[in-house]
Image 1 (cartoon, rainbow, N blue to C red):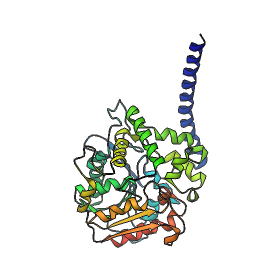
Image 2 (image 1 turned 90 degrees about the horizontal axis):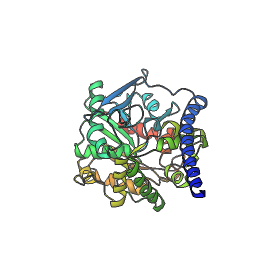
Image 3 (image 1 turned 30 degrees about the horizontal axis):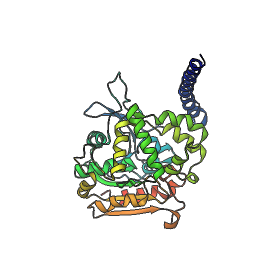
Image 4 (image 1 turned 180 degrees about the horizontal axis):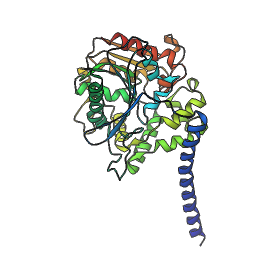
Length: 370
Protein backbone atom coordinates (compact mmCIF):
# COMPACT_ATOMS: atom_id res chain seq x y z
CA UNK A 1 0.00 0.00 0.00
CA UNK A 2 2.79 2.37 0.92
CA UNK A 3 4.48 1.71 -2.46
CA UNK A 4 1.25 2.41 -4.37
CA UNK A 5 0.72 5.63 -2.44
CA UNK A 6 4.24 6.76 -3.26
CA UNK A 7 3.70 6.01 -6.96
CA UNK A 8 0.45 7.98 -6.98
CA UNK A 9 2.12 10.85 -5.18
CA UNK A 10 5.03 10.81 -7.65
CA UNK A 11 2.71 10.77 -10.66
CA UNK A 12 0.66 13.59 -9.15
CA UNK A 13 3.78 15.64 -8.51
CA UNK A 14 4.98 15.19 -12.09
CA UNK A 15 1.54 16.09 -13.47
CA UNK A 16 1.29 19.22 -11.31
CA UNK A 17 4.85 20.22 -12.19
CA UNK A 18 4.25 19.88 -15.93
CA UNK A 19 0.98 21.79 -15.62
CA UNK A 20 2.68 24.59 -13.69
CA UNK A 21 5.50 24.76 -16.23
CA UNK A 22 3.02 25.09 -19.06
CA UNK A 23 0.93 27.73 -17.28
CA UNK A 24 4.08 29.47 -16.10
CA UNK A 25 5.45 29.82 -19.60
CA UNK A 26 2.17 31.25 -20.90
CA UNK A 27 1.82 33.70 -18.00
CA UNK A 28 5.48 34.69 -18.30
CA UNK A 29 5.19 35.53 -21.98
CA UNK A 30 1.92 37.40 -21.51
CA UNK A 31 2.94 39.42 -18.45
CA UNK A 32 6.45 40.29 -19.57
CA UNK A 33 5.35 41.20 -23.09
CA UNK A 34 2.67 43.62 -21.88
CA UNK A 35 3.97 45.05 -18.61
CA UNK A 36 7.72 45.23 -19.14
CA UNK A 37 7.97 46.85 -22.56
CA UNK A 38 4.54 47.01 -24.16
CA UNK A 39 3.99 46.33 -27.83
CA UNK A 40 6.80 45.09 -30.04
CA UNK A 41 8.04 47.64 -32.54
CA UNK A 42 6.91 47.06 -36.10
CA UNK A 43 8.59 46.56 -39.43
CA UNK A 44 7.34 48.34 -42.54
CA UNK A 45 6.09 45.09 -44.10
CA UNK A 46 5.62 41.46 -43.11
CA UNK A 47 5.97 38.65 -45.68
CA UNK A 48 5.59 34.86 -45.73
CA UNK A 49 7.79 32.97 -48.18
CA UNK A 50 7.12 29.35 -49.07
CA UNK A 51 9.83 26.73 -49.51
CA UNK A 52 9.56 23.86 -52.06
CA UNK A 53 8.52 21.49 -49.24
CA UNK A 54 5.72 23.80 -48.07
CA UNK A 55 7.24 25.59 -45.07
CA UNK A 56 6.30 29.26 -44.74
CA UNK A 57 9.19 31.48 -43.61
CA UNK A 58 8.57 34.82 -41.90
CA UNK A 59 10.38 37.87 -43.34
CA UNK A 60 10.26 41.43 -42.03
CA UNK A 61 11.02 44.35 -44.34
CA UNK A 62 12.42 47.74 -43.29
CA UNK A 63 12.66 50.52 -45.87
CA UNK A 64 15.66 52.87 -45.80
CA UNK A 65 15.14 56.27 -44.23
CA UNK A 66 14.20 58.63 -47.08
CA UNK A 67 16.56 61.42 -45.99
CA UNK A 68 19.68 59.24 -46.29
CA UNK A 69 21.69 58.28 -49.41
CA UNK A 70 20.03 55.15 -50.81
CA UNK A 71 22.15 52.02 -51.11
CA UNK A 72 22.18 49.65 -54.07
CA UNK A 73 21.60 46.25 -52.50
CA UNK A 74 19.27 45.09 -49.72
CA UNK A 75 20.66 43.47 -46.58
CA UNK A 76 19.34 40.11 -45.33
CA UNK A 77 19.89 39.52 -41.60
CA UNK A 78 19.74 35.96 -40.24
CA UNK A 79 19.56 34.62 -36.67
CA UNK A 80 21.42 31.72 -35.10
CA UNK A 81 20.37 28.34 -33.69
CA UNK A 82 17.41 28.25 -31.25
CA UNK A 83 16.63 31.84 -32.15
CA UNK A 84 14.72 34.16 -34.49
CA UNK A 85 14.91 37.66 -35.91
CA UNK A 86 14.28 39.29 -32.52
CA UNK A 87 17.82 38.36 -31.46
CA UNK A 88 19.01 41.08 -33.88
CA UNK A 89 16.02 43.38 -33.61
CA UNK A 90 14.86 43.55 -30.00
CA UNK A 91 13.88 47.22 -29.91
CA UNK A 92 14.85 50.32 -31.92
CA UNK A 93 17.74 51.01 -29.53
CA UNK A 94 19.01 47.45 -29.93
CA UNK A 95 18.37 46.72 -33.61
CA UNK A 96 20.69 46.19 -36.56
CA UNK A 97 17.63 46.75 -38.78
CA UNK A 98 16.98 50.25 -37.44
CA UNK A 99 20.70 51.04 -37.52
CA UNK A 100 21.19 50.02 -41.16
CA UNK A 101 17.96 51.61 -42.41
CA UNK A 102 19.22 54.89 -40.93
CA UNK A 103 22.29 54.44 -43.15
CA UNK A 104 20.23 54.07 -46.34
CA UNK A 105 19.96 50.28 -46.58
CA UNK A 106 16.77 48.33 -47.15
CA UNK A 107 16.79 45.55 -44.56
CA UNK A 108 15.04 42.16 -44.51
CA UNK A 109 15.01 40.17 -41.28
CA UNK A 110 14.98 36.44 -42.09
CA UNK A 111 13.45 33.64 -40.02
CA UNK A 112 14.43 30.09 -40.96
CA UNK A 113 11.82 27.31 -40.84
CA UNK A 114 10.07 26.75 -37.54
CA UNK A 115 11.03 30.19 -36.19
CA UNK A 116 8.89 33.16 -35.18
CA UNK A 117 5.67 33.58 -37.21
CA UNK A 118 6.45 31.08 -39.94
CA UNK A 119 5.05 27.54 -40.13
CA UNK A 120 5.23 25.80 -36.77
CA UNK A 121 5.61 22.02 -36.66
CA UNK A 122 2.26 20.38 -35.93
CA UNK A 123 0.48 17.16 -36.80
CA UNK A 124 -2.42 19.11 -38.30
CA UNK A 125 -0.06 20.81 -40.76
CA UNK A 126 1.90 17.64 -41.42
CA UNK A 127 5.13 19.35 -40.34
CA UNK A 128 7.48 17.91 -37.74
CA UNK A 129 10.79 18.77 -36.10
CA UNK A 130 12.73 16.43 -38.38
CA UNK A 131 14.31 19.14 -40.53
CA UNK A 132 18.07 19.62 -40.60
CA UNK A 133 20.78 22.21 -41.18
CA UNK A 134 20.91 20.94 -44.79
CA UNK A 135 17.25 21.93 -45.28
CA UNK A 136 18.09 25.48 -44.31
CA UNK A 137 20.90 25.50 -46.88
CA UNK A 138 19.11 23.84 -49.80
CA UNK A 139 15.57 25.18 -49.37
CA UNK A 140 15.27 28.12 -47.00
CA UNK A 141 18.13 30.27 -48.23
CA UNK A 142 17.32 29.92 -51.96
CA UNK A 143 13.66 30.70 -51.20
CA UNK A 144 14.31 33.91 -49.24
CA UNK A 145 17.13 35.14 -51.50
CA UNK A 146 15.05 34.62 -54.65
CA UNK A 147 12.04 36.28 -53.03
CA UNK A 148 13.96 39.38 -51.95
CA UNK A 149 15.81 39.83 -55.25
CA UNK A 150 12.54 39.52 -57.17
CA UNK A 151 10.74 41.96 -54.86
CA UNK A 152 13.50 44.56 -54.96
CA UNK A 153 14.59 44.13 -58.58
CA UNK A 154 18.27 43.58 -57.76
CA UNK A 155 20.59 40.79 -58.81
CA UNK A 156 22.31 40.22 -55.45
CA UNK A 157 21.95 40.80 -51.71
CA UNK A 158 24.23 41.38 -48.76
CA UNK A 159 23.97 38.64 -46.13
CA UNK A 160 24.64 39.29 -42.44
CA UNK A 161 24.37 36.31 -40.11
CA UNK A 162 24.96 35.48 -36.48
CA UNK A 163 26.39 32.09 -35.51
CA UNK A 164 24.43 29.45 -37.46
CA UNK A 165 23.01 32.34 -39.49
CA UNK A 166 26.30 32.58 -41.38
CA UNK A 167 27.18 28.91 -41.16
CA UNK A 168 24.22 28.28 -43.46
CA UNK A 169 25.58 30.97 -45.80
CA UNK A 170 29.06 29.39 -45.79
CA UNK A 171 27.40 26.19 -47.03
CA UNK A 172 25.06 27.92 -49.48
CA UNK A 173 27.68 30.21 -51.02
CA UNK A 174 30.15 27.34 -51.29
CA UNK A 175 27.77 24.81 -52.83
CA UNK A 176 25.89 27.30 -55.04
CA UNK A 177 28.98 29.36 -55.86
CA UNK A 178 27.93 32.76 -54.50
CA UNK A 179 24.57 32.72 -56.28
CA UNK A 180 22.93 36.17 -55.87
CA UNK A 181 25.30 37.17 -53.05
CA UNK A 182 26.94 40.62 -53.07
CA UNK A 183 28.89 40.32 -49.83
CA UNK A 184 28.81 38.47 -46.50
CA UNK A 185 29.24 39.53 -42.88
CA UNK A 186 29.91 36.65 -40.49
CA UNK A 187 29.36 37.35 -36.79
CA UNK A 188 30.48 34.62 -34.38
CA UNK A 189 30.10 31.87 -37.01
CA UNK A 190 32.50 28.91 -36.62
CA UNK A 191 33.53 26.03 -38.87
CA UNK A 192 35.67 24.37 -36.20
CA UNK A 193 33.94 22.95 -33.14
CA UNK A 194 36.29 22.31 -30.23
CA UNK A 195 34.16 23.70 -27.42
CA UNK A 196 34.79 23.48 -23.64
CA UNK A 197 34.22 20.02 -22.17
CA UNK A 198 31.30 21.06 -19.97
CA UNK A 199 29.48 22.48 -23.00
CA UNK A 200 30.07 19.29 -24.97
CA UNK A 201 28.50 17.33 -22.11
CA UNK A 202 25.42 19.53 -22.40
CA UNK A 203 25.30 19.09 -26.18
CA UNK A 204 25.44 15.29 -25.82
CA UNK A 205 22.76 15.35 -23.15
CA UNK A 206 20.39 17.53 -25.16
CA UNK A 207 21.02 15.72 -28.44
CA UNK A 208 19.84 12.59 -26.61
CA UNK A 209 16.76 14.48 -25.43
CA UNK A 210 16.16 15.72 -28.98
CA UNK A 211 16.40 12.18 -30.32
CA UNK A 212 13.73 11.06 -27.88
CA UNK A 213 11.42 14.06 -28.14
CA UNK A 214 12.27 15.10 -31.72
CA UNK A 215 13.10 18.65 -30.63
CA UNK A 216 14.58 20.74 -27.80
CA UNK A 217 11.80 22.82 -26.13
CA UNK A 218 14.06 25.80 -25.58
CA UNK A 219 11.25 28.33 -26.03
CA UNK A 220 9.10 27.24 -23.06
CA UNK A 221 12.25 26.82 -20.97
CA UNK A 222 13.30 30.40 -21.79
CA UNK A 223 9.84 31.74 -21.00
CA UNK A 224 9.87 30.08 -17.59
CA UNK A 225 13.32 31.46 -16.79
CA UNK A 226 12.71 34.93 -18.27
CA UNK A 227 11.45 36.61 -15.07
CA UNK A 228 14.78 35.81 -13.40
CA UNK A 229 16.68 37.97 -15.87
CA UNK A 230 19.42 35.35 -16.08
CA UNK A 231 20.12 31.84 -17.35
CA UNK A 232 19.68 29.35 -14.46
CA UNK A 233 22.37 26.96 -15.72
CA UNK A 234 25.79 28.49 -15.14
CA UNK A 235 27.30 26.56 -18.05
CA UNK A 236 24.84 28.17 -20.45
CA UNK A 237 25.41 31.64 -18.99
CA UNK A 238 29.15 31.06 -19.35
CA UNK A 239 28.65 30.07 -22.98
CA UNK A 240 26.27 32.53 -24.50
CA UNK A 241 27.19 36.05 -23.42
CA UNK A 242 29.29 38.44 -21.38
CA UNK A 243 26.75 39.40 -18.68
CA UNK A 244 28.41 42.79 -18.33
CA UNK A 245 27.03 43.79 -21.74
CA UNK A 246 23.38 42.93 -21.01
CA UNK A 247 21.06 44.34 -18.37
CA UNK A 248 18.62 41.95 -16.65
CA UNK A 249 15.78 43.75 -18.44
CA UNK A 250 17.39 43.08 -21.83
CA UNK A 251 17.98 39.44 -20.92
CA UNK A 252 14.31 39.06 -19.90
CA UNK A 253 13.24 40.51 -23.22
CA UNK A 254 15.63 38.30 -25.19
CA UNK A 255 14.43 35.17 -23.42
CA UNK A 256 10.79 36.07 -23.99
CA UNK A 257 10.96 37.05 -27.66
CA UNK A 258 14.16 35.77 -29.26
CA UNK A 259 14.23 32.05 -28.38
CA UNK A 260 12.68 29.29 -30.51
CA UNK A 261 12.72 25.50 -30.27
CA UNK A 262 15.48 23.50 -31.93
CA UNK A 263 14.64 20.71 -34.37
CA UNK A 264 15.94 17.30 -33.41
CA UNK A 265 17.47 17.02 -36.87
CA UNK A 266 19.40 20.26 -36.44
CA UNK A 267 20.73 19.40 -32.97
CA UNK A 268 21.78 15.93 -34.15
CA UNK A 269 23.68 17.48 -37.06
CA UNK A 270 25.41 19.98 -34.76
CA UNK A 271 26.30 17.15 -32.40
CA UNK A 272 27.94 15.41 -35.39
CA UNK A 273 29.87 18.61 -36.23
CA UNK A 274 31.25 18.69 -32.70
CA UNK A 275 31.82 14.94 -32.36
CA UNK A 276 33.68 14.54 -35.67
CA UNK A 277 35.19 18.01 -35.90
CA UNK A 278 33.97 18.20 -39.51
CA UNK A 279 31.52 20.56 -41.21
CA UNK A 280 29.55 18.06 -43.32
CA UNK A 281 26.07 17.48 -44.68
CA UNK A 282 24.06 15.00 -42.61
CA UNK A 283 24.72 12.12 -45.00
CA UNK A 284 28.41 12.99 -45.22
CA UNK A 285 28.33 13.51 -48.98
CA UNK A 286 29.13 17.25 -48.91
CA UNK A 287 32.12 18.69 -47.10
CA UNK A 288 30.92 22.25 -46.53
CA UNK A 289 34.35 23.43 -45.38
CA UNK A 290 36.00 22.23 -48.60
CA UNK A 291 33.22 23.82 -50.67
CA UNK A 292 34.05 27.19 -49.09
CA UNK A 293 36.91 27.47 -51.57
CA UNK A 294 34.17 28.51 -54.01
CA UNK A 295 33.35 31.61 -51.97
CA UNK A 296 34.86 34.61 -53.76
CA UNK A 297 32.61 37.49 -52.68
CA UNK A 298 33.85 40.02 -50.09
CA UNK A 299 33.45 38.63 -46.58
CA UNK A 300 33.97 40.14 -43.13
CA UNK A 301 34.52 37.88 -40.11
CA UNK A 302 33.71 39.27 -36.65
CA UNK A 303 34.58 37.37 -33.46
CA UNK A 304 34.21 38.10 -29.75
CA UNK A 305 37.23 37.50 -27.54
CA UNK A 306 35.11 36.01 -24.70
CA UNK A 307 32.91 33.88 -26.97
CA UNK A 308 32.93 30.30 -25.67
CA UNK A 309 30.58 28.94 -28.36
CA UNK A 310 32.48 30.39 -31.31
CA UNK A 311 35.90 31.60 -30.09
CA UNK A 312 38.13 33.36 -32.63
CA UNK A 313 40.25 30.25 -33.24
CA UNK A 314 37.09 28.36 -34.35
CA UNK A 315 36.19 31.10 -36.84
CA UNK A 316 39.68 31.65 -38.30
CA UNK A 317 39.55 28.41 -40.39
CA UNK A 318 36.56 29.89 -42.24
CA UNK A 319 38.64 32.96 -43.09
CA UNK A 320 41.41 30.68 -44.35
CA UNK A 321 39.00 28.50 -46.37
CA UNK A 322 37.39 31.18 -48.55
CA UNK A 323 39.01 32.34 -51.80
CA UNK A 324 37.73 35.92 -51.51
CA UNK A 325 40.33 38.51 -52.42
CA UNK A 326 38.61 40.96 -50.09
CA UNK A 327 38.29 39.45 -46.65
CA UNK A 328 38.88 40.72 -43.15
CA UNK A 329 39.06 39.14 -39.69
CA UNK A 330 38.26 41.31 -36.66
CA UNK A 331 38.27 40.31 -32.99
CA UNK A 332 36.11 42.73 -31.01
CA UNK A 333 37.60 43.37 -27.57
CA UNK A 334 39.04 46.09 -25.37
CA UNK A 335 42.52 44.94 -26.37
CA UNK A 336 41.75 45.64 -30.05
CA UNK A 337 40.40 49.13 -29.40
CA UNK A 338 36.70 48.56 -28.73
CA UNK A 339 34.73 49.65 -25.67
CA UNK A 340 34.09 46.16 -24.28
CA UNK A 341 34.93 42.47 -24.39
CA UNK A 342 32.27 40.31 -26.06
CA UNK A 343 30.70 36.90 -25.72
CA UNK A 344 28.42 35.19 -28.24
CA UNK A 345 25.00 36.86 -28.10
CA UNK A 346 26.01 40.31 -26.86
CA UNK A 347 28.01 40.80 -30.10
CA UNK A 348 24.70 41.48 -31.84
CA UNK A 349 22.38 42.79 -29.15
CA UNK A 350 24.48 43.90 -26.15
CA UNK A 351 24.31 47.47 -24.90
CA UNK A 352 27.66 48.51 -26.46
CA UNK A 353 27.10 46.66 -29.78
CA UNK A 354 25.62 49.73 -31.50
CA UNK A 355 28.85 51.67 -31.09
CA UNK A 356 31.28 48.76 -31.53
CA UNK A 357 29.82 46.13 -33.87
CA UNK A 358 27.12 47.83 -35.96
CA UNK A 359 29.52 50.43 -37.45
CA UNK A 360 31.87 47.60 -38.53
CA UNK A 361 28.99 45.99 -40.41
CA UNK A 362 27.79 49.24 -41.95
CA UNK A 363 31.25 50.24 -43.20
CA UNK A 364 31.81 46.83 -44.77
CA UNK A 365 28.46 46.87 -46.54
CA UNK A 366 28.98 50.41 -47.78
CA UNK A 367 32.45 49.59 -49.10
CA UNK A 368 31.07 46.61 -51.07
CA UNK A 369 27.76 47.96 -52.31
CA UNK A 370 28.85 48.95 -55.80
